[in-house]
Image (cartoon, rainbow, N blue to C red; front, top):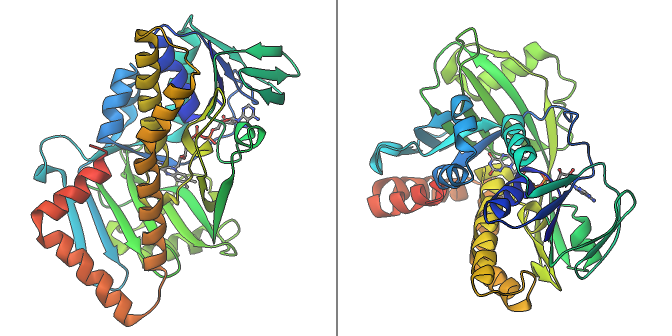
Length: 381
Ligand SMILES: Cc1cc2nc3c(=O)[nH]c(=O)nc-3n(C[C@H](O)[C@H](O)[C@H](O)COP(=O)(O)OP(=O)(O)OC[C@H]3O[C@@H](n4cnc5c(N)ncnc54)[C@H](O)[C@@H]3O)c2cc1C
């Protein structure tokens, strides 16, 4: 038996993968599993590597009809002519990734979880305390398992209970998320625009039911940006000033804002306990990699547990958890430093540094092996 705390995008997929291996799972969630939670407008960039993983989880057939392929990624610094252009054809016929709405992903996962006989959903759950292999809950009493997995997000209760130290990084920024329709088609292109006030991403979505081209934005900027209150026509004007390439744009959703913080942890395991997803690492959304990294945690943890089963071992055994920690270390650290470094590099408002950044983009664009290396990283392959 494995207990998973948190039925978000990472915990739900872990439950599905473990159930496919024949492992019994108790999935604990503080919110209701039946009532839809409030809408979350994030447009999640799913890498090609993650798409292949979601196929293995038998989730992709439900997601495919609503996913928008990304065939090209363009990166540039505002008010400069240099761009870096990643075209999927440089690597083969597959798209570089897909955009899927957060709610669509979660709904597909919850649907699959509910059909599994191996997964017991314990929702509306209040957790009281944790000791190795034992979770005390208010509603369901004491639950026992060989392993407890913390998939409970960046403010992880599990992490606090086992005293794993975390370091949070405040950027003093927030991200505005919204959906817009626009005059011109997006041609399956994702854009990343760097500016000193914060990065801006415009991500292609499926056309609306009326056939209008549509995109989602992630606009990072100062905490006091008036995005929640600014009248819609002004917001649309600002967007067109920043990004004039799609013609007239029209807000097509409510607005969501998210604080931007990053987080690292000292370790990802404790006695009979392991952390996955945002509980183990939270990234600046600049590169759209957070949940992709979390799904790679799931892939590696599942492999380690499968290996434990094959040798008749203990699923929460020290050596298996140590092996999981070893396999995840470089991926966690490198993506954290890459996203954090990129954010800091582009926040410097200085002509010389700007020249160096543009030269860097140009160099990457002109050296095919270097360009392919970065493309493969972005595609999670
Ligand atoms: C603006 C924005 C855009 C992003 N875009 C991308 C993108 O394009 N691509 C990408 O890969 N990533 C993206 N991310 C990151 C991604 O959203 C997160 O990495 C991902 O959602 C983390 O999933 P999780 O399941 O680990 O954690 P969470 O989503 O935080 O889920 C945790 C779950 O645990 C439950 N829980 C919490 N505490 C308890 C408790 N005490 N008891 C029981 N249950 C509990 C919660 O209710 C929740 O269901 C973006 C993030 C932001 C903010």
